[in-house]
Image (cartoon, rainbow, N blue to C red; front, top):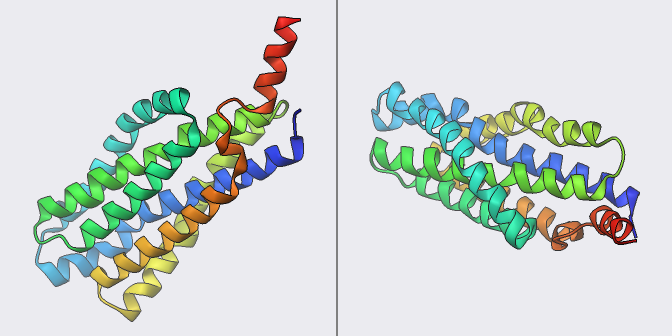
Length: 204
């Protein structure tokens, strides 16, 4: 049986999770100056991690989407949350620009790519009408991220060095991602109510 109200709960969870993931990635703009000043790395070397972010996110999205079709969105989103935390942690421990690029650029980019396709697919399964609006609202997290996570990262920089700040970001993102993941019961279902209802109508 379809649960339209829970469908909109899934929309809100999707928006929040994309906000956390994209916000962690966009926080590089805040960390850029403290990193270059503390390490002596060039601005180009550090900022190139953002280029890797977008390339990895786009490429990984295809794989995450296909994997979500096979095993469902729940394990995919969980894997993405784990990779996001791992990428931030490794970036905070980087001793060379290449290590930072691989940790923050590659791993974080791959992790962020795991949130979009599975969450949008899950939302589409729970929402029967106004699907365009639902997908747009999930995407709102992308626009809200710089207004929420970036100020948080800037505040952390005033309290500690950039390495410790990224560890705190990693803990914060991991904690809230896992909480949202565990509370989103809809992600447990490979086939959501609307899809089941549609299949039953075809069978009749």
